[in-house]
Length: 138
Image 1 (cartoon, rainbow, N blue to C red):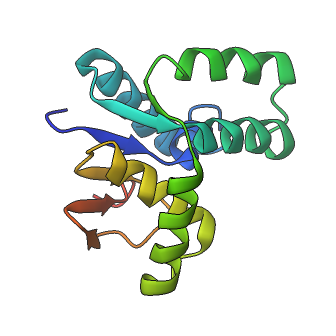
Image 2 (image 1 turned 90 degrees about the vertical axis):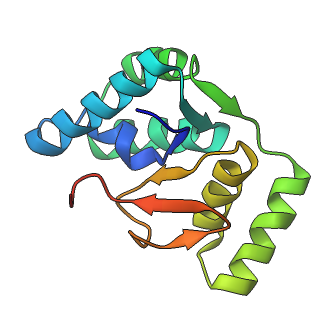
């Protein structure tokens, strides 16, 4: 991994999804590569979404998901503040992103990432030098 990369919550969720073994393998490889290169970035929003999704949708025990949040928080972490919320509103207004997606994009931009790994956003789209990449469709 050569460039700073931001991870959307769906990549973290796939690390626990045994019903999608290929996506799980890819997610685990990307996250491990980011960990080793120290070029992976997450936000507090991503950690929150990861916890809720894995516990609610995958049935991961809360204590296990909590421990993984602790581990994931060792990545560079963007803490969302009021300026981020306002900038996300502007991204929402200008580009018609859903607000929560715009907040992810804002955190990736603020942290200087050139890649945003996400299954849910518009793969191939570039916003202010940030490219959205769906790692499952390569």
